[in-house]
Length: 111
Length: 115
Image (cartoon, rainbow over all chains, first blue to last red; front, side):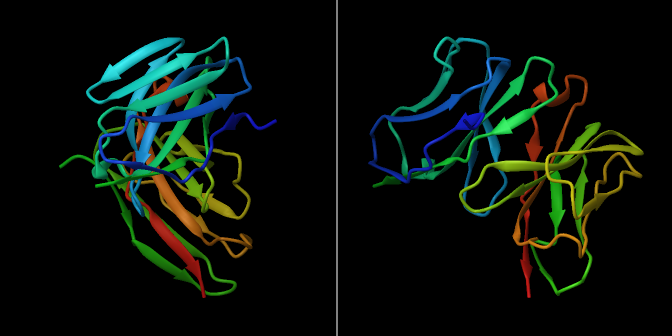
């Protein structure tokens, strides 16, 4: 079983839709969870960073961590064409010695 | 403007040739990283450095070498021993105090192609 699993998509939605992006993981030692957004042929940029379980909201974005299920989600409300990108989940163990990335989900928002 | 710059944007390598990718940051970060990204794959760590004149191998260091002579610079050499070098290479930096828990800021990347 891979440490981090992420459905690569592609995921296509109309403008204004609510988008749900997800990752599952197998290592219970992961404590820090991140979502990066990567536009085509660009470097990733950090969107959300959460610690342990719970929700974190920033504008149209909400990150959710369910440690009991080893499942994290990123929700995008009122999606815009500018949200079209690849979204990478990433997670870090408690000791801070390993950062593991998912393969990324490609999202396309049509106007 | 503070940030990370990578050059060149595109690089072509001939068979048996060593090539060097440049990464410079003016964020005053202690830690720097090199990742490789293949199509449909997540980022894989090649090398990282938490302090000048010191660096550690990541998960896929074979066929690559690095140096860290200055805080702001972390060049990556792709040697002829790397048999499948075609990929998108990303450099990142972070404040090093928390290790991998610290937010990493990425450069724009270099795309390496083999002729």
